[in-house]
Each structure stands twice: as C-alpha cells, then as structure tokens.
Image (cartoon, rainbow, N blue to C red):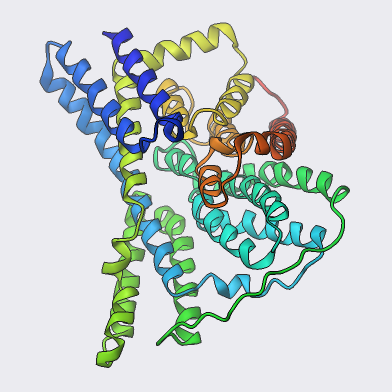
Length: 433
C-alpha cells in the first residue's frame, strides 16, 4: 500500500513539474494525486470511519490556508483594479543601471513582505516594462526581482505561502519569524546586489508610454483604496496575536471591511458610470482571483496529508536523521531541493515529518526552514511561484536563467543561511543541531 501511494505521488509530482512540457495545467495532476492517494489509503484500511476522521482533521488545516490565500488575493486584486500600486511605482525616477537595480530590488523585498512574493513579482514585472525599453536588460532585472521577492517573502508570515503554512500550522510566530529571519533574508539579497554593482555600467532607456486614462477614478479614491488595502493586510498578524484566532479570520475581516467601503463609495453613481463601477466591485474582483492556484494547493496538500497518515513522512524523517543527522544540513538540503521541486509540498512534508512536541513553536528547525524554503526557490526559475510567474510574463528561458541568475542566487542563499546559523549561535551560545 505504502509503495503504491508513493508511486502515485511521484508520478503526479512529475506531471506537476513538467507542466509546460506535457501542456497540462499543474492543478489537474495535483487534484488527481490528492484524491487518488487518499482513495488508495482508505481502500486498504479496515476502519474507513477513522480514515475519514483523519481526512477531515487535515482538511481543517488545509482550508485555513486556502481561505487565507483567497482573502489575500482578493485584497491585492482590488488594489490593482484601482491602479493603487502606481502610487509607489510612479515615484521611481532613476535611470542609472546600478541605482535602479538597488531601488527595484529593495522595493520588491519590502513589498513582498507586505503582499506576497507572487503578487509582488507580477506588479514589479509590469513596472519594469514601463521603466526599461531594452528587453535583454529588462530580463536581467526581472531575474533579480525573483531573488528579491523570494527573500522578502521568507521573513514575513504573509510574504510566502510556505511561511504562511508554518505560521498557520503553529510552527512559527509572526514576531519571531520577522526578528530571526529578517537579516539572513536581507543578506541573501544584498550579497548578489553587491556583486552585480561592480559589473553593471551605464543607464537604461525608458520606453515611450501613452498616458492611461482611468474613467470615473479620482486620485483620492486610488490612494485611499491603496492605503486601506495595505493597512488591512498588515493588520492580519496583529489581529491573530490579539484574538488568537486563525490568520484567515483576520483576512476575511479585511475583505469584509473593504467590501463595505467600496459599496458605500459607489452607492451613488450615474447610469454612465455603472460599467466602470462594476469593474471595481468586490463581486467582479472575486471572479478574477486565481482559483486554479487555490485548487492546486488543495490537491498537493491533500496528497502530502495522505503521506502523513500512511506513515511515509515519519519513515522519511528517520531516514534523513540516520543518513544526514545534522538538522542544519537537512534543512539546507530541503531549501536547495525547493529550487527543483515546489516548496509547498516540501514544507508540508517537513511539517508532517517533525512534530511540535519534539520541535515546539519558534524552534530553530522551523525558522531556518522558513528561510531556506523561501530563498532556495530563487536558485532556479521554476523553483518558486514568483519565478514561474515571471517566466510566463517575460518568456524567460530556463537555461538563460541558469547562466545569468542561478549562480548569484546560490551565493546569496548560502550567505544568508550561514548568517542565520551564526546569528543563532551568538544568541544562544550553542548549536546542538
């Protein structure tokens, strides 16, 4: 039974990673894998009621992640529908390559922590199209944006889906993950930027862009929705800390508040404004969120849950402990693996391999995993949602990324990882891992 479940998982996962080769959206094999692995497990057990109980227990944890992501996507999509992100991007005036590199990278780093690395990458790639005319130069900046977005997402509880999973799962707290992983994450970006600063010369040429017209949209509305949306996203970890409710509750509260504000803002409109108002309503925005990604996470997390209840993850944990032994080496290996294999199932598997009883909240393991899984995805363009999004938007060639970006991403990854280990040693005076 165990070998069959593993085989199904491996085949399903291969279909996910080869999405662009086989021309099948990764959501389909993820859902099939999730359902089939559970079907195999329940058919080989004598107590089907107990298996269903395990499934529903895992579904509760999975649902909290999915509702959190849906809320975050809705708020970000609404801000974008009001062109709110231009409040930031229109302030960038630099044309010198080195200056622009640092501005774009640091902006991406901090914006990713507030929003998430996927959304920030989409926003920044769109911005770079307005800032850089030459495509080869722009591609290089997009590659750095991927590194910056993943580094920025790693130290925030809402910046990367894997960090969010650890936060919702109770492995990390919002305050500690920020304090302990901020500097390592920043170093994973600063080191590559410093190397590149000695190589980049000259200035960029900006493309000519016609002024866009936003009908029935005032500057006050644009800034107000941007400020409110960002404030509500920042409120989520504060809400969890104060109320001790799951993070998705704070996110749903934010969606509800925005819904009220938008409806009241446009409760009086002329007949000619109806179409424009509908395009910025919450009902319309909900139809534009990436539901395929939500279903992908559902499928892959269900599949990983089946590996957990069937005992596969426990056996894998014992194998790693016996063969590698050192916890730091295990986590760093996981981070590098996330550049090849999606970091969502890797983190989900690690959560199943190690219990909170042995490794409590804010343990070295969980914080270091948040850093490694987040930043390790930058090593290859397919290693993170941010990289895949940029790859699709700018048609980035896999081997071009390996030649131009991977080596500096790898240097930054190890620089931040070793700094985290050193930081932990200086604070605690020992490393028993």
